[in-house]
Length: 266
Image (cartoon, rainbow, N blue to C red; front, side):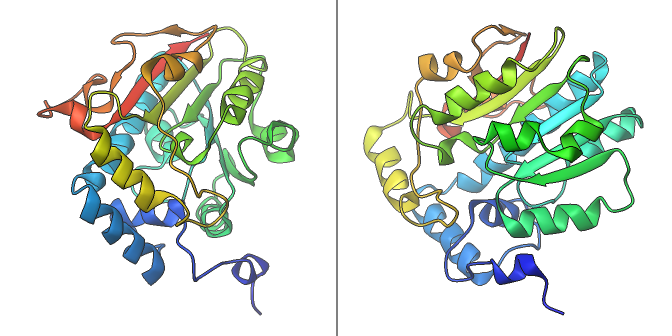
């Protein structure tokens, strides 16, 4: 029997989650996604490195948060399950860690659901992260996340898909549910420090090319990224280019990766 999520797939339009999966070496992508990936590479050859740098930041951030005692993770815009999932990282060190993934892409949700079938401490919600009422009111969130205890809100590799002020307003609504000792870990594409004509070409390639409404690449400046951390105290090293956040190896010219990263404590 054909599954309902499969009927919803638009196989003629690439999905950001599946393109990200392709760049990370995953298998949950289609020809149209791989074609889009190659278009992006043509205008920014290190785009795959940017994707991997985001994933590496996610791993380092989750490891740090587990180390300081966080046991609850709400991963917004989590994408297709691939190498280095949050529950794998967190539960390796803390088997009692609880994780909820949130994504709007039906294939990302379907594969996440299948992967987590035997994991009672992890779940998935299909929703647009900006729809905070749906996310926060979902029974999976109610079952696994206790907002009276510290929660790590993860927003990694997704904000560039969301234009305008809506994502900022959404993050503030999530923040208002977080108790003391909670954290926000976030990345955001920027053109700060880069040649404008190159980033504009990348933006033109991205714009209008994706499904699920992700049809505009939104780059934000340093002050705009800092606005997401209102009422959070940034932990060391603060807001930096993604490869410079507690790196395990030195990356030459980290500015070329065109992505800010930070972790803040509430």
